[in-house]
Image 1: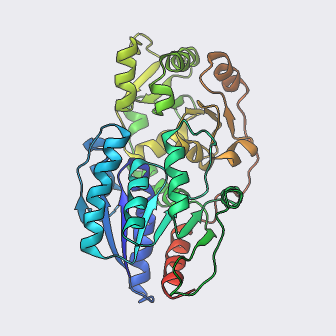
Image 2: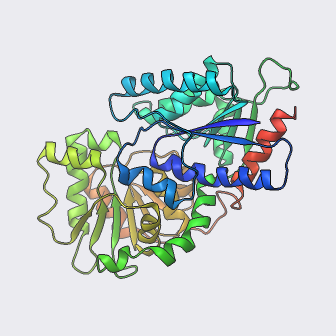
Length: 378
């Protein structure tokens, strides 16, 4: 069985790593069928510090194909990816295309596969923010409607698909279209479990920046809805500056998009010594920061989950989240961009309920088993 996996952005590298390892373990055990894993890197994140380093650090095989698409408008990026992925699929003739998450790479991979009549499997299927202004929401909805196998992290994700009429369809291996909806857990939890000991052993970021465990806050901002709206961006940074203090500095690895937006809006971050701006950090350094922070503020879906994994209170700088379970369990508060709401959330932040949300850490193994069962007619 040949599987073409499409990656292109930092979170997808992280999600692909445990699945690649699970495929290799399946082959080591001489599973049926053996799997050929073809990795395609679209180049959606082209900065070396946010892309190439992850292949080395997370022990992912280097990509078989690098499309080098780079940045651009949503339409330009998706169109360029679609054309180049289609050419690869025609050449490789895979049995499956595996797409991750909700980026333009996800949508382009799903569209290219569907047009080439190659079955699509979508990891993190069924997530919904119900905000159609978010490019990520459009990408994930369309990928789900194209997918043959939908790998859902939670029961809420399964319920969301059912509400849209995306349910399992019957038929054997020869059926024109078969659909499988599988709740498998969250592959990012697999990645976290694998890498947390590496982070503890290898990361020196706390010492490098004189950070004491649980005596600092961590913030990330990169979503288009925040970076492209000067009012929202100013509100968020007003709150971040207020939260940062000599007793509890605020650390912020700065995304390139956010850096450009701050410059365009005339927002200066260097005037507050307690707001420590860092360049983009590696995944292991990010785990170390998350695990040792006293509070996390973010607009990232992945960081919301990782805050839950390390049981650190989280303030989400959005008005909605696709990871509703983190809010329901009490570990995450939706604050949007209003400074008062963000500050109120930070003051009230506390421990939530310790509940099992994202599986047992073998999501990647479940994905591989489902792919094999589908190909074998199950």
